[in-house]
Amino acid sequence: MPRPILATIHPAAVHHNLERARRAAPDARVWAVVKANAYGHGIERVFEGLRAADGFALLDLAEAERVRALGWRGPILLLEGVFEPRDLELCSRLGLWHAVHCDAQIDWLAAHKTQVPHRVFLKMNSGMNRLGFTPERYRSAWARLNALPQVDEISCMTHFSDADGPRGIAHQVQAFQTATQDLPGERCIANSAALLRHGGDAQVRLDWVR
Ligand SMILES: *Cc1c(COP(=O)(O)O)cnc(C)c1O
Figure 1 (tube, rainbow, N blue to C red):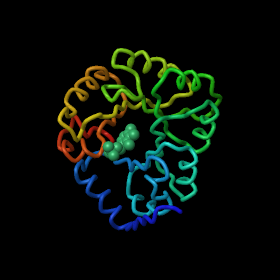
Figure 2: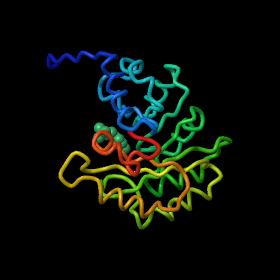
Figure 3: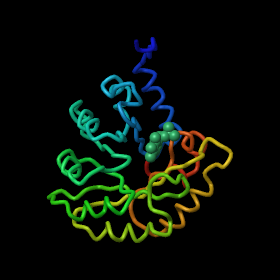
């Protein structure tokens, strides 16, 4: 028997939370990060509450299709990028933006046949130690991507490991700034905790918050 757990979702409350995030960084664009199955809520149930976002950021390609099927024509970002080469076909077809965090994903892009160059978010591992290029390797990955006809714009991103905790974000912000210094393109580093704590800092909110 399933556990008798009930979640009640109020779309107005979801919308309220989104507006709270936007107020913390009024001049940044806001990704609604819904991870997978909208953190278990089901994307169809929270879509209305989140449609005032500037984009949807998620993990699952099938969910990206569902967001398009709901009529969303704005940005959709695959936070972990593609998982196999043929995923890139869906990115071309649906106009999905995708993170690039490893060499294999660059190889797949280089071999991808498309008329539509992709917008990518190159991910730096500035201390989360999960995904991304180290600061030392970041610029060479950027240069490789930049040389590909399959790539349109490159944005820079990283993820904080302890935005809510004692270590804070300063060391990661510093590593990110140093390695991306004169690179063109938009930037996105703040997750919820960094946004709520440091959204007033222009070095943290940058172009997009998540
Ligand atoms: C999950 C995730 C977020 C949102 O994380 P919060 O800490 O809940 O704000 C933002 N960015 C990335 C890359 C994520 O994976």
